[in-house]
Image (cartoon, rainbow, N blue to C red; front, top):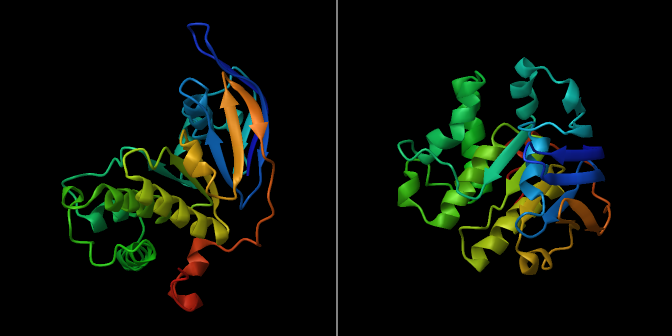
Length: 242
């Protein structure tokens, strides 16, 4: 769940990045955040990730009231979400398997669990057989799927995709959103920021439009099936569901 309650964000320069944002995104929703450059999309995401704090108002994400988070609690909060970036941010000296497994190593998961989970998400995203390859040996679309696998591997309740289609061709852009849609259909909340209006209109998801720091349009909430965690999507439930 994501909730903004009367949120304003003003930077030291006096520029108003966001003004009076009131928004509720339910668990299990898929929402696009769209808007031109300077509309406030980047600030919106920084507030959700707790990279910035509001000038006034409250942001609640995954039951964390972010204004009350202590510095030492922020890393634990961020483990509830997976992030997909436009520029992939893969480590080129690591294999695909190592890139995906990295965040599991950081939080101390056991080797057996890491192996099982990484192989599962690679299969889920049609990357089986790519585990021993290096990022620079892959196409742009494959690299973005590795980034998505990395975001999924710790079974987050929320996926944030920050312009994930910015460096791939139109067909791969559609493929990426279709993958995110399949993940969302299993109960994971997906928030995708994009400027590609034409791509957005190909999908029946909620669309929230920002303009000069204001929400100027919102197609509203949509009903979603009862939530099923990505953990429940694994082989013990009868095989990969895509």
